[in-house]
Length: 480
Image (cartoon, rainbow, N blue to C red; front, top):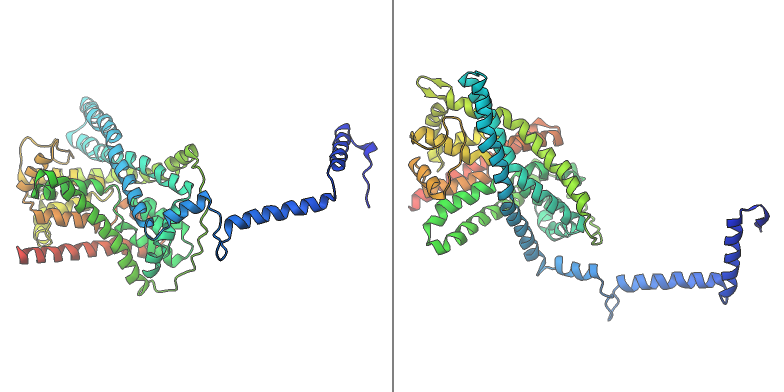
């Protein structure tokens, strides 16, 4: 046996060895037996908490008790729906205030100041319009309406992930997504898509199978992102809520918006089922999900990573596309040919097609030129409607996006533009079923590296949107 020569050790080592020998002499019996006994006792305590035996259930723990509630067949889905509904409600309501602040700074103050600066510098009207009224204002709209919701939703989503709840969501939804041929983890990427589809596409990196990841990428657009919530809420409130007494208007509007969101989830499953049995046929990969223990979320770290990795990353991509889109919006409204603007030419050409689909030419053009961000669809629709109706005293000029102060003013303007209840219903459906915004399309291309699947991701929901709107318009006119 090797012995330790304490004579050459430091005084500290000598003291430690002396203390060890002293404590060793105070322990009765064999010290090795005590160590083994302690190990067995600890193993027995762990087994007692983790293993159920016939006639004796495992001891309750905080994690197990919470899991029995959150993954329960009875309570799991209602709690999940209520929790995410609360997140959406907090996002929508809490984003209003910072959105209005940013809009006040960038549009109410920044836009006139920048315009005066250009005019004072002797800039030609077309250059001022193109840069200030088009590129700057379009970008300001995107920043003011996208930044606050993302800065609120993404941290909340990441906090749930850090707490350990999102794996439970995947566990609850695994059976539904597995039946559609998709991966259970797609539940989490779909939930992320409700905040922002581009972020949802990035989140599909958690799916290892390339086939199932592609399924999640293509179908993520059916999750109603925050850019489409304002359109849904406004149109439901203005047109559908107006069909019933005022006491029921809020309930009817909320039910209509919730119905559209649930329709998106249903279409995610149906389209996933169809793709997994045709062009993306393959075996469903094994989904081994280890539910992590619950732990207190790391608030500041989560806040930092959410803002840097998700919010600013997605916002920057949106700004990159908003600048040229703002220029296009201004140009189509101000470049004339044959006495009419390019926008008026297109609207007259597309109006028969739009009306056949229960929409109109203004809506079709708005969805083309507002492709950088769904948030600017309604301001673009209002601007184009003023242009084609020739309404006086509304807006700030051709190609300049604006908002109206009240829902009644929105209803009067859109009704003057030929809108009916059918137009409102089909716009809500088309808002769900149309091509992803340019930010999401670019993200799909970067994530898949494939132009082919990017085109499929754009044309599939667009084709479905035309088909669904056409069918609804046909049935509506048959029964009315």
